[in-house]
Image 1 (cartoon, rainbow, N blue to C red):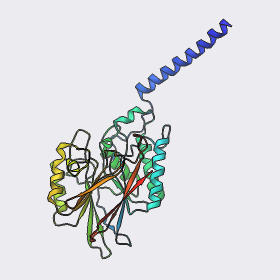
Image 2 (cartoon, one colour):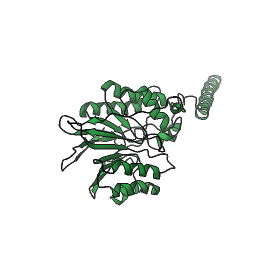
Image 3 (spheres, rainbow, N blue to C red):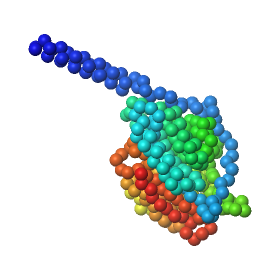
Image 4 (tube, one colour):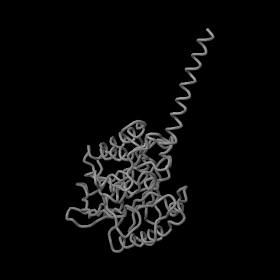
Length: 324
């Protein structure tokens, strides 16, 4: 009996040692952190102009905004949460049938991806691409701080998407910092330019939007139609408008341009992961913060926002919250 007990204990200890050794190897060597996209922007640079978009038959333009999905894999082990996020995005795209889907940053997980074992940025991006390909759905994104970190930069993400995805609308002003700074023009039935969607790269966690981006934005607003602006971080102006989040103090250059213009109808961001969508109107401009859309980070119910734009009407925006 004693001999049998010793054998049993020895087997248990052996398994414990093997498991412990395997865990140490996995967590230190990170052998499953595979298929990064580092350098993709250098090997597959993307350029080119984007054709204007048309208002729909109702004279509206419907944007479905997701944000902070924080995908790490979507195809292999440890991907259940990511596949759940993408399935809910696909459900709502099908239900809403938007004219454009916008993802406002942190589409992929950055430095916190190292908290999980099976990280694959190529698989994560292909999982996202597959959703839009199945639905023939036009979409775009503006980078967040996590998209600038770990196993590939925001420029690499943009280049990867432009190379592999037929439905993504992306460009970048080459003179500006970051990976995605561009305008989508909305036209009406007679091809008149009636509204513009402006996308600005919020840059990295430890950086701020630059004066050159603010100057570029000012030029896009001068003597042009009303604009809806999308980026990742809430700027200090959101705090002044009543949102409980101060943003990065150095981002005031962008705020100054927005406040000086009389044709900014909406500024919509993510980043903060609020428990529910928030928006307010201050001096004729809506400031909006959308709840996170990914299941991987936090315990609050993910979701997104439906933004209906009606150029030329008194009530130019309608907001509807969606919850996964």
